[in-house]
Length: 259
Image (cartoon, rainbow, N blue to C red; front, top):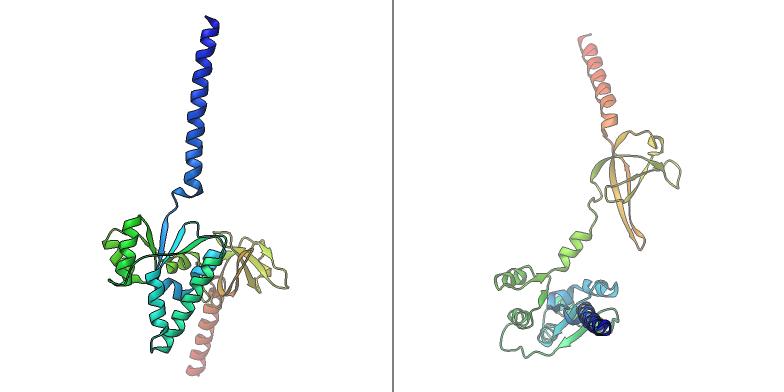
């Protein structure tokens, strides 16, 4: 009887283990590529060229497909009479060739018929047929794709999301919490952790005083981003003395005029 129970328990254990392994391997297969999106690249993306930097950095984890109809459109533009379009089309073809050589991304030329309809319409058809999305910098194409219930992503949206929140000329009130590597520099931090080096702000370091700064330039490195700023010319901490000085000058001028 005990032997019979042991055999039954062993069978249940083996079956449970098999089901667990099957589930695990299935999940691994989905992660390793069977559920990867198909991204169809349009002409404007290739002529823009920024997709090359994104791919080289390893951020294109999907199947990136360049339809032959897109390549043919680039060839037509490269043979056209407009010198600017010729140059951009040739650059786009160079980008397509370089994309295929990048090992970190899966990029290939997709054999499609095309020809009978416009390239933009063909891209929407391909995305529908294969459950894919369109990568484009063309605002109008993205809008048309949306009406056809096809998703479209835009390199411009990516660039906008990655750009610095503050640009040169913008102002912000901060606290100087440390000193910089160069004389008279103070160091502050933005809410996202970005370090800001402020010229002539060393005297405010550690004083828990809020000052107004004006951003001068933005630096992006492999280690992260950094911003440089200067003391705002009319910061709140200095505005009251300036107003008092102007008031005293006006009073002095009035006295002189009365005399």
